[in-house]
Image (cartoon, rainbow, N blue to C red; front, side):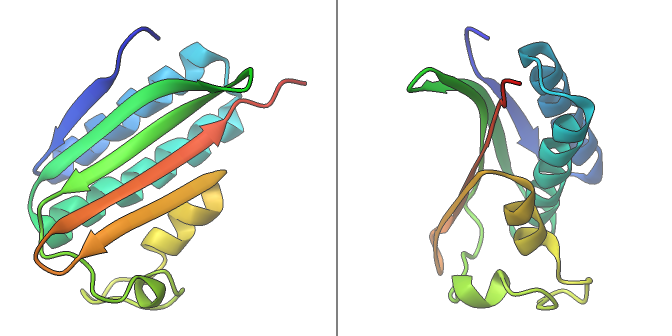
Amino acid sequence: MDDERVVEVKSEYDIVIARAVVRAIAKDMGFGLVDQTRIATAVSELARNIVVHAGEGIILVREIIKGGSRGVEVLAIDQGPGISNIELVLRDGYSSKGSLGVGLGGAKRLVDEFEIKSAPGKGTTVRIVKWLSVR
């Protein structure tokens, strides 16, 4: 993949688009079906959080190479209200909107790398990476 793909996320429909884009990129990179599903599910959770909590944002998807390993990197970026207690929102069962409360923690478990940067009033950026396992 020579460039990055950006999906604007403003609605439920955009969640489906983001999921399809990352799945197609992962497939083209050679990820197996299980890992395609893992990364697509994680992106679905991140995009849903953008819609529910921030109203709009972007999902940026790109291939990365590090030390001879290839992976897919996704940034979920919004300018929403931000998160005051990151540790709390990563805890299973926590929900500020009445959901099951497995979104961010679940996304974290599906990928190899997970980073979140947020501050109240400044928005949130979540970075996830899934590395391509060579068998």
